[in-house]
Length: 426
Image (cartoon, helix red, strand yellow):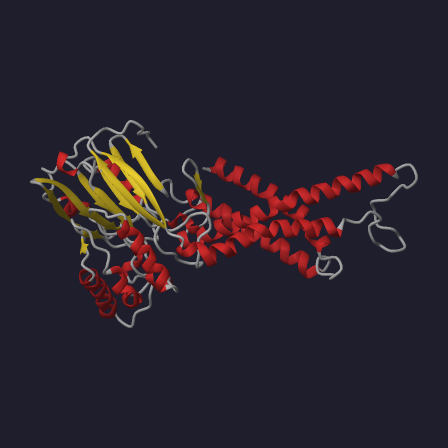
């Protein structure tokens, strides 16, 4: 652990020195305005760099609240993209200045130094190059702005086959739809939300799972959208569980009874929408006389910030005879911390929670997000032995009102009674 910290500090020092180098380019870009050469700019830039780098090191090395950790990582990586884009322009300008210095080295002795008369650089930085670099570097920021405007509701359907060797033949080919992390308190476009529900229903799933976080803080956030989500129906039922935001733990309450009523209202809302909310319990799903188990465990997160309401023993009770058990559990860290070491009878766990940090890259064969430094399993399908985990990156959003690269997800699974030929250990 100490060696890891030492390496992180060395990397941090290197990034800080690079920041100071880039600061000269930023200053040159605003030379005519006189901003870059002020003491305030230099001190402010340096302090911001130190705070951000220190925050990232602490976020990686220590267990701190995930919201703070995610904030530091997201800001760091967004600015890193801008700086990496800007860096070639600063290097090109320094190469230009070096060529000029070498060309005149025989006739001048101190061309790169300030003159006694003016105190200014004899070979100044190109203000044009620096501004061009800033404009180019602004492209990633524009992409983030576009993500806020368009990415928040750019729902994408992702298809996934789940191979289950013990799956009864009656369930072979059954389609499961999954949505997660609705966070209705963040929505500002009701028509777009309805469009996403229509996309889900258009896939005609046989059963639908919702894996938690219907609201941000309070149950009344969902009331304006209850009519929309009440349309989420499937022939074999809609099954749901709670996420860390659903318990009212992040709101200020006048009394404990008010908080309890809020949770009671949320449970009632699930029932009013026709969703079968599983609170540390299970449901035997029957098709043509054969059965599998749908299990719903309340929120359980490995990180200390998140509540541990989940109890697997009552969740599993009475399922011993079922050949396949599908678990709904909001936080994917539950899989590695408890499910893998203690509950080998769980075939697939369905989660959400991470949002993919709403920022990153996700293609068919590659995915990356800063959230990977917080959660080992953060998006898509994972295997270990005969057990599987799927992490849905969410239907809604929390924090900044958009998504860049990691778009809102509707997942459609097809169950197959076979071994997965492509299964890999994580």
